[in-house]
Image (cartoon, rainbow, N blue to C red; front, top):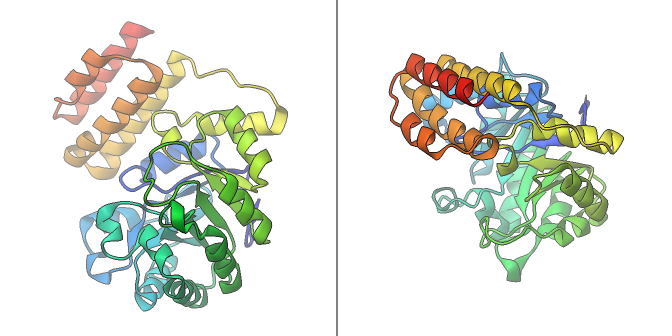
Length: 321
C-alpha cells in the first residue's frame, strides 16, 4: 500500500490510540513488524502545544519508519495550523481524527462528533490538505449512530478534498466499542472511492485480518486494541498475509525481553515518576495476554520506583521461564 510517496513495508498499521501509541510503543510495534504506526492524537488548540504532555508527543526525531501524526479539533483554521506545526516538527503524514468516540473529545465537536456535520468535515479537510505539502489521511467511524451511517458520503467528500488514505473503524460513535465491528460499510466505502481504504475494528488474529481484507477489499488493516499486550501481532499478520503460514507465538524469553525493553524505554521517555505509572497498564496488558498472573499484577501496580519495577519483572519472568 502507498500513501503519497510512501510505500508501506506491509499492509498492517498500528492505529492511533490516546494514552497508548506513544513513542516507546510505536518504536516497539515498528520493530515487531508494523508497516506503519500513527501517533496519539494531538490537539489543534495552540494553547496546549507548550504543555509537557503535548511536547512529549510532538518530537519525531526518533520516530521509526514513516512519521504519521494524528491531529484532532473542529476549527478548520486551527486544524490547518496544527498540521503545519507538526510538519515543521518532522511529521511526514498528517492524519485527521474523525473517529474518536470519547465524550470529552466529542463534546468539543471533535473526533467522531464531526460526522454529524458534513459541511464542516469538508471545510476541515480542505483547510488541512491545502495547508501542507505532505499527504493527509483521515480516520473515521461508519457514522454517528446506526440510523445515520454516512461513512460512504464522508469518504467521497474525503476523496474530493484530496485525502490520500482513509481508515474506517467498523462501528458508529454510538456503538463505542460494544458488540462486533461490521465490515459492510467499509466494503461499501471501498467500492465508492478510489483512494486506499484501511479496515479497522476487532482484528486480533492473522486469520481475521485475511478475512476482513478479503471481504471488504480494503488495501490494509489497522490494529488498535488487539496490539495492547501483543505487539507481536503485527509480524504474525504480515507473515500470514504474505505466506499463508502461521508464525509461532513468541516464547517466554522473547516476551521477557520485549516487556523489559518496553518498560525501560517508558522510564527513559517519561522519567521515573510518569514512566512508572504508564508502565503499569502496559505490563497489565502483557500479563493478561501472555502470562496470566493476577497476584503479581496486583503487586506490580503498587511499585513506585523504576528500578524496582524492572527488578520485580526480572524476578517474575525468571520464575515462569
